[in-house]
Image (cartoon, rainbow, N blue to C red; front, side, top):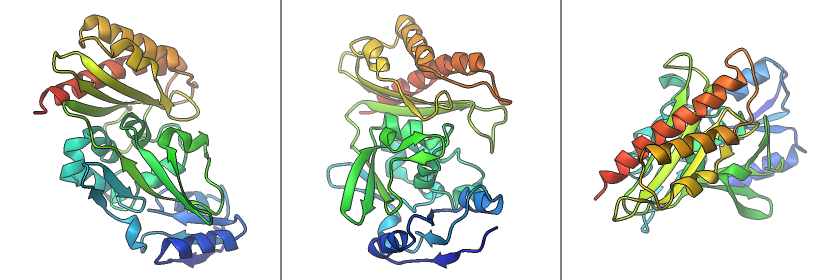
Length: 291
């Protein structure tokens, strides 16, 4: 590991100042579960590591008066997964956080790190996209907001400048009779990387038809992949066999996967269709259970 300075600022401004002063050679540490491995493996070097865990504004899951949520970027995944209000409003986001690594990893890892590590297979990202989450990014010029799907630009790369940092996620209040779900396909049930992941959020109209739908896939393209065509085949219809078949088809058509030692492209494409069906059924059942 290349030697580096360790800083633990207690304010967002101080963290941004440290990033700016480094001239682009600093790395942010949220949980460190990916960063420390990369530094030890010398995949990249850092002159400074800036720990975000001591910045109060970056911790916690907060429900606003309008029912929307703000999740601090340094909040451990275990805290996100266990939050009762978030689990009730956006169960897909909570269950995606609960699938990241082991218990020990989740006690350190963050959704911000999961996103900014920019792995195509990151579990939380499809669920956040399906929820319509926004990433709040702070830098020397102030704050800006990006849809979560705009943050990653490719494997290992993001749209953030070297002196910017993700400080929070904002999730809207779910509409009445809404439900969400995240499912993934892995060789093992625990501590594995998704071969395919699927996040979906549905809202049901009073007559039982689908009023709104958002879906995103993971591990089937260079970045997590929104599938806007899902709304086109679901909205205005009941979630019957015909609708599920159409959803399966648009999920498959959206995929641009690779073949690697963990799965062939054909397997990932087929898996995307199957997970889309299953996640939609689960999300719809949760929506139906809402008052």
